Structures are given as C-alpha cells and as structure tokens.
Image (cartoon, rainbow, N blue to C red; front, side):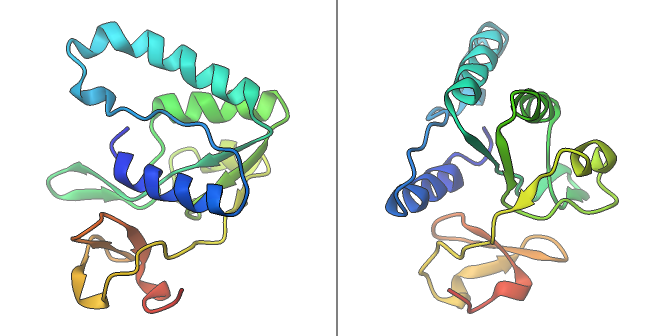
Length: 154
C-alpha cells in the first residue's frame, strides 16, 4: 500500500506487455479508520489471488524507522498473501531479489519464487535519482526505485 505510484507504473508496464493486471488502487493508509478497512482489503487481495494465474510481489526497499531500511520489504499481510498464492499453485514472481538475510527467507525460498527481471520504468535523467539505501536509489520525480547496479540501463 505504501508504494501506490510504483504499483501503478508496474501495472502500466505489465499491461503494455499484454498482461491483465489487478491490484489495489487505493492507499489504504489514508482510509480512516484504517482498522475498519483492513479486513475488507485483505479479502479483496485474496479474491485477486484466486483470480490470477501469477502474482508479482512488489517488495521495494522500505524504511522501518528513521535509521533502519529493509532491502526487500515484505510485511505480514504480503507474506500471508504469498502463502495463499503458493498454496493455490499460482506462479510467484518478486520484483526485487529476496536476500538470504531476509526474516522470511527460508519460507519464501521454498515457494519457488522467481525474480522478475528488474525493469527501469522511469525515463527521467539519472540526476533525478538520490540514494535510498546502500543498494537502491529513488527518482524524485516519479518515485521509481531501482538498484544502483541498473543505473543507466533500460
């Protein structure tokens, strides 16, 4: 939910490749009171998984607190959704690699998740990017996150 602009960019990119895409179009954290929306949103996500034949995990780096970044963020709800998709036999893809030090690495590693070959969706100049973490940078114009290794690649 935190990366709605990035999800929208990814969805447009996947649709341009001929994929049919379903995802939550709202920033649920803006819905008040959030607790009242949480159950509804979780059920909607499960319905999308049931509808799909593949699931793309959008696991951008995320700030956990002011001084701590997670390189491949997967929260509790996403972990549950991944498990449901795996159980239902859906193909699983991850936008970014899940590092061995990830808290759920063993569980995720056993689910056959393939890495979606990272695409640089942003067409802004490299000067628009600033370092986000040791391995990633973010575009200040559109919010695209990319690995520093992919800098300048399209």
